[in-house]
Each structure stands twice: as structure tokens, then as C-alpha cells.
Length: 369
Ligand SMILES: NC(=O)c1ccc[n+]([C@@H]2O[C@H](COP(=O)([O-])OP(=O)(O)OC[C@H]3O[C@@H](n4cnc5c(N)ncnc54)[C@H](O)[C@@H]3O)[C@@H](O)[C@H]2O)c1
Ligand SMILES: [Zn+2]
Image 1: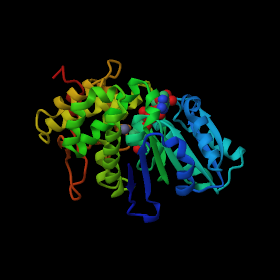
Image 2: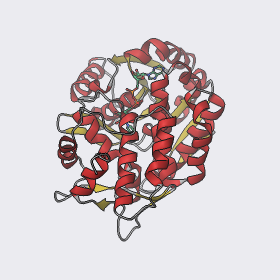
Image 3: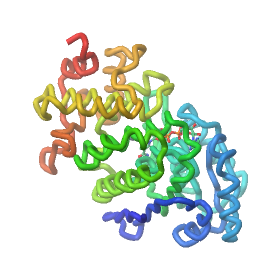
Image 4: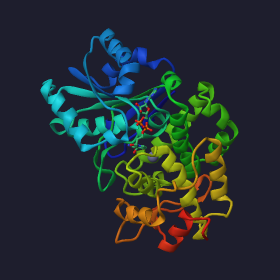
């Protein structure tokens, strides 16, 4: 399956997302066509390096492309300015010029850091996303948001930089731990809530096979999520408007991640965030009462958490939300559903809603209410 992201602001920057099995073997041909360069920097983390970098380097060599490998330690803690600086210096040390390109091989952490390196290296060079986690395939590799985490919060230093190609080879999911598969399903559930009730029902009907890593059911799920994300970002590349609906669950999620020192998985935090923010939508009378319970059921079936970790206190989370980039004038704003499959908002009223603090507190602490 190939999904094209038509970028309206810059038509010549449109790019393809290719989804299928066994695509790594023919990566060289696609890269040469969509992202020609004299030399390539293959950026990856140490886990993916030992699993797939050799195969990718072979595929590039077969197509006569010159590539060097740059690996950094795996994990969210390394999605940092330090990693960005070290990689940038390593590329400079290897004397890669403006006629080079980056290939990001890995999960969302690799995609975000390598994308940010590409966005800033010699004022910007092209890059290819080769996502290897479910989360990266169906979400983070698309849309051109690149960033690192800093002490003040998640993704606060970064840039918009669109990839020239995304290649998702489902075969690599065979080595992905179940916990990471679940984390990816959190973003798929989000896509169902924000845009497609029938897709949400598909996830309800197939969660066991999805969590079991069954590629037959995972492939159409990746394809549908990619379509939804591509459709949302195509009309709003730099998040001036409707793209904000992709942040459903993420205001709370980013606060949970920041207060946990990034020890909790992004997908786990998103699951908790979706349940909490759906409760906020219900409390504000924007969504029908069953919404959060239905999301909570699917989240649980997918092996994801639904309540904030005991270590994350309500006041610490509220304080962290004030640091999040979606706050304006000291008010915390949320992207909220009006039902499963539809978000609240329009071009005139905007796509986010301010929620009073007592409503946020009650949603984070349902047992005390
Ligand atoms: N840019 C965006 O639009 C966007 C969207 C959503 C999430 N994100 C970001 O994505 C990050 C989360 O990404 P993630 O969940 O992919 O985490 P990750 O990149 O940390 O990958 C998770 C773990 O799986 C390992 N791994 C990767 N591929 C593997 C494979 N095929 N087999 C075995 N192990 C493998 C990695 O080494 C890592 O240890 C967060 O930082 C989040 O903020 C960005
Ligand atoms: Zn996310």
C-alpha cells in the first residue's frame, strides 16, 4: 500500500508512505528515487542497530548508495539535546556535505532525533523515515514533527521538517516486544476516536490478534492509521488549526511522561491521557457519558494502563500541564472528542477547549469524586 501525503503549502514536498512486507530488501531503489544524495547517514539506536542496520546497509550497497552508520543508546532518555549534538558532530566529523541525506531507522525516538538532526544539519538536509516500531509506523514517522525532550518538557525544542519518503516494513514487527506493540495500539485507538468510529470498532473486534503480532490484521491497521494521520496533517502542516486534534490524550500524556522522568512509555501515557481527557469532555457536557468507559475498555484489552501511576500526583501533573506548549494565558487547553470518531471544534471556534482546573483534577482522580 502506498499513501501519498499531499502538502498544500509546498506541493513539491509531497511524499509517499510505503507499507508492506519485505520492503527493507528493496530500500535502496526507493531511496535513490525519492531521496537522491551523494552519501547517506544511517541513524539508529543500538537495539535496532544490531537487529536491522546490517540488512539496510546491504540494501543500500546493492543499489550502489554510499552509507555510514551512526548509532546512539536506545530509549526516551536519549531523545535529548546531547544526542542531537553528538550525532551532528559525528556527521560533521565524517565530512558529510549538503548533498547528503539522513535515513532514520528505528522507533519514534530515532525518528524524532534523526529528523531534528536532518532539519538543522548545514541548515537542513533531506531525510527518509524507516520506522521499526508499530507506533512509529502508524504515527510518529508521518507529519514532519521532529524534536528532542528537555528538562522543561517533552518535544519542546524541535522543528517541522517533512521526510521525502517513509518505508514501513511490517516484517520488523516480529522482533518488537508485546509491550511496544501495545504502545503503538494506543495511537491507533487515538486515530479511531478522532476520525473514524468504524476503525475504532475494528480495533475492538481484533485487539487480541493485534496484540499477538498477527501481521494479517496489523497491516490494514497501519494503513488506516497512516491514511487518517496523512489526511489530518496534509491540510495543516505546521499545526495552525485542525492538526491539533492529533493531540487528543497528549496534554495529560506529556505531563505523565515529564513527571515520570520519561520512565513510562509514550503509548502507555497516551492511553491514560485519552481516558482522562474523555472524562473531561464528558464533564464539560461535550461528549456522551459512555465515551471514556468505552475507550478505557479497549485500552485495557490492548494491555495498556488507564489510570495515572501512583507516583504521579494530581498536583504535579497539573503543574506539568502548565509547562506544556499547548497552554495559552495560563489556561490548559485540550483537544476533546464529541463522540467516538469525531472531535469537537471547527475553523471558527478553533480545535481546543479550555477546561477549568477542578474538572481536570476530578478527571485525574475519578475515585475521589
Ligand atoms: N513526531 C511525531 O509526530 C510523534 C508522534 C508520536 C510519538 N512521537 C514520539 O515517539 C517516541 C516514542 O516512539 P516509540 O514508541 O517507537 O519508542 P522507541 O523509539 O523508544 O522504541 C521503543 C523500543 O523498541 C526498540 N525497537 C525499535 N524497533 C524494534 C524492533 N523492530 N524490534 C525490537 N525492538 C525494537 C527500540 O530500540 C526501543 O528500545 C516518543 O518520544 C514520542 O514523543 C512522535
Ligand atoms: Zn503520541
